[in-house]
Amino acid sequence: MVKLLLMNLVLIEPFNICRMTKENYVKLLEHLITEHYCVPRTIKGFWHILSNYKENESKEYKSIFGEKNVNVVEIDNRTISLAVRGSFSDNYIYLAVAYHIYLKKENKKEKIGSYKMVFSLDGGVMDDILYFD
Image (cartoon, rainbow, N blue to C red; front, side, top):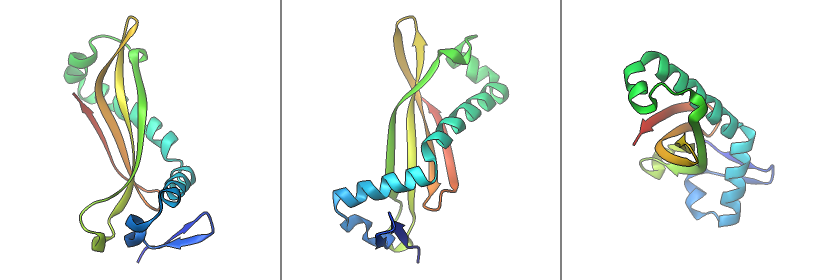
């Protein structure tokens, strides 16, 4: 069974996460996100996948962005979550960092999609998802 050492103080078993106080839950989430550099890795992953998308799916890319440079793309409104998939008995708990993708047009921003990177509790990248509205 996976166990986590929270801030070198409290040993937490994953199935007990649902019983945690809000304060301890936030501390656990901050600790894991910081320890594994999840936010900067997600930002880097977004720009990498967008570059690959432009290269490998050029027709789709042009239908969304036209001939514009990626300088018109902005990511914002980050969401960080600790989630359980399936049942608690499976111990399938993961971290996710998600951003909304905006296309800058003149003085406005238009939301055009989202990007999410999913991490295991030990910091490994499990998946990343780019989708457009």
